[in-house]
Length: 112
Image (cartoon, rainbow, N blue to C red):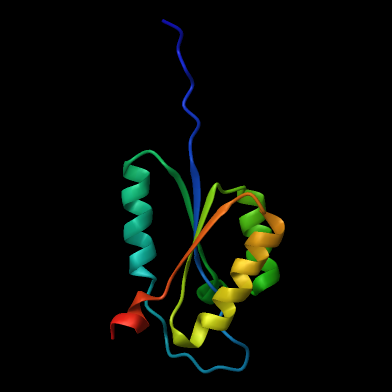
């Protein structure tokens, strides 16, 4: 029986850049993304978490990171204040990785 090489699915999880000129107290790490990343890695997916705020990363840096990783799936998280940034991130993914699946989450605001 021939050995079939399994292609690893690459998933990028994104915490989008903060809007300019906004005051943010010290942020806690994006635990939801970290939990998802751990579970995905445990199930043999290749995962990267792009946590823009602590890196002072703007959308140009986000584009560079996502495009260089070449993900099959991109997950984008958002809260009310970062929703416009999440939309911009989704546009970046759509324009630069057009065949990639995209998903977004803003459950924190929807459920509260």
